[in-house]
Amino acid sequence: MAKPMRADARRNYERLVTEAKAAFLEQGTNASLEDIARRARVGIGTLYRHFPCRIALIDAVYQEEVDKLVAYAAELGDADDPFEGLAEWLRAVLRHASTYRGLAAALMESDRARGAGATMTACKVPMREAGGELLARAQQAGLVREDANIPDLLQLTHVIGLAAEKTPDDPEIAERLLTLTLYGLRAKD
Image 1 (cartoon, rainbow, N blue to C red):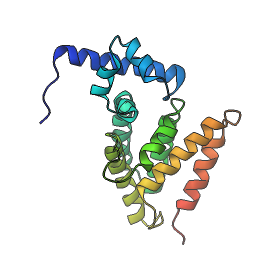
Image 2: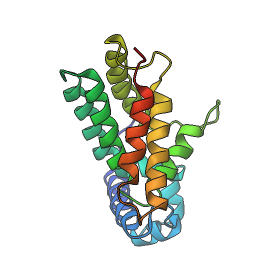
Image 3: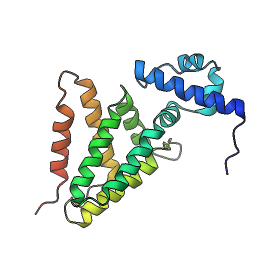
């Protein structure tokens, strides 16, 4: 069981998350960690004590949004059409990944990390579980290819978010690419 934070440590943590969110809105997820620490009125060592890597800070900033996506997956678990439930959830994930410049790339980097020393983001596990349940339901209904898996679908969704970020003059690209992905996901009759 984790030891509770002291009051001053809790305040520092909350200021860091608040300032990181503001910096990510202004500059994207590659905002300077030193600048975030300075804005939160703490030293860089304090930032690293709370968040040993950039992904850990990103997790903390986006935890609320991830909780909403997990809850939305639970709601969609009762959808009449399991394929449409999965598709709608992937659209919501795509909207989330497109919220801040650089978030899709950071999520892709986190997804790509493998091995014993790799950072597993705190948000990744519940997202994979929530999406995995929707995918399994659609596969059991015979609507989705059996070889599809949720890590690949989340990675594809992040790639689509990155493509949309890099193509700001085409606001429809994300939906077109997701539609193509969903078409390829369908089980063959």
